[in-house]
Length: 274
Image (cartoon, rainbow, N blue to C red; front, side):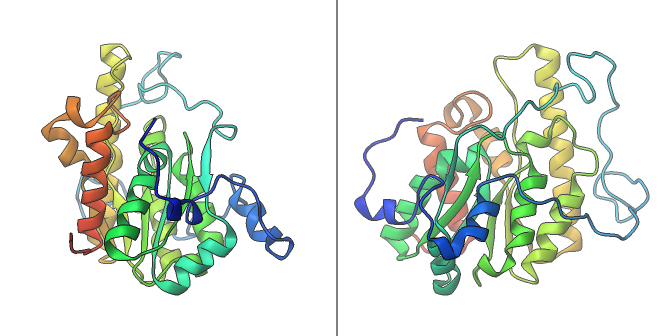
């Protein structure tokens, strides 16, 4: 997504994965790959329940048999490891943690908004921003990185933008949220709700996209009811008001959408507009 030229200070905050000092090799290696898998909580899964029920995580749509769209109607997630990403240096991650800046971890939606948000947070609030975004990355490997580096979460908490790439397999997605909340150890976790409605896909796939997005969001709402430190940032509700203006393709924010997205995160973090 092409934008206007960025302020010079921004590039001290955001970098493409590369350029780490030798003593940071371990951190750099973890940050620049999907991550070492970390086991999900050992506790048994709650019994199935209705959406929002205290008895268990929400249930979604039935599985489908069409091999082109199986198992949940949206198709399958292809290889993502070679996709583009933005990654701050280990030094920048530590600076953000020490200065109580903003840490953002997510997918291509976060990648489309990270630079604008970093510029806004820096210019208006004097806050440094560090990011770990990876196009098409599902939640599990993003959670792997967070679980491996809880010390990088600043006191104000972490902004997580993940779930859009899990519409292809939404079952038990709530377990990844559980892992991130546990890693944050009481610090706030600001999680953006999901909206996927790929305009270029057939009608039945678009319908599945929307239903699976709702299923992801139902699980997120369910977890928020269990964990007070999990703060929902309702991007889906904002998009629903004017999808064609705020999105470019049914998933990624347009220029107007980026502005609305950053404002939503700014408000969630309790930052006063100036």
